[in-house]
Length: 123
Image (cartoon, rainbow, N blue to C red; front, top):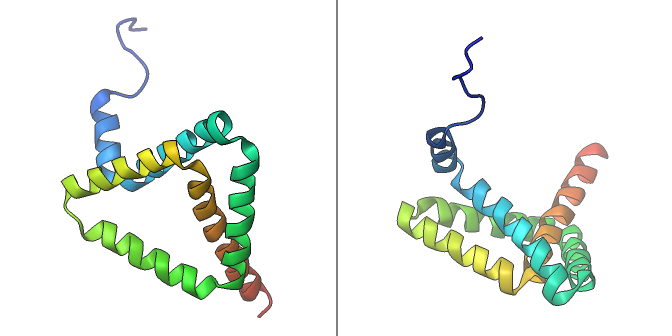
């Protein structure tokens, strides 16, 4: 065996992954930051309440939520790389200072998906 061979991922592989999956990385970081800062600053109650309210709205208005989120993601995709990084940084700042808002959006998308999936299965 070669003892000099190291297992793992290189820094270049991580950089390439983050370039290809920029939005996913920012969203994962935002969710993790929102979780930690929700527990520290607001308590879990506000995050649960935001998720509940968002899911109720998402179930009642799935077409509106789906259309809004599609427009929002299309807007992000059309921006230059620098602007995308700035918008990602703003998302991280919102996750730190307003974590219940992040959970509200998670609830909106979760409620929308519940409504869409239940309509598909009932057909």
